[in-house]
Figure (cartoon, rainbow, N blue to C red):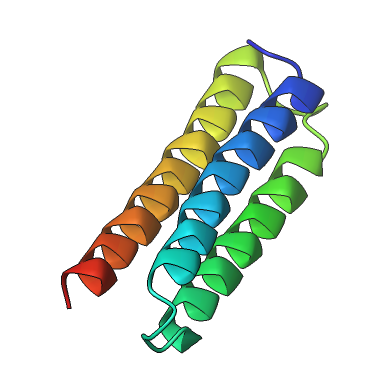
Length: 95
């Protein structure tokens, strides 16, 4: 299992990728409303902060399988949020 610092770096990297795609969309589509893009970014950042809070919780009372499952759930949940954010951005670009 990766350490917490690497896990946070990976989540930050994924967040940066989605936000950069959002900013590219705003730059290319300057004539469209940008409020939905801001909502996508805010939601993603809120989920990232929530994931960081869960990662920072102590795991000293858990066995290794429970810890692995906890981190797997955090990562999978964040991947779903990032994927839904990219899908929402894709839907905006189709309008």
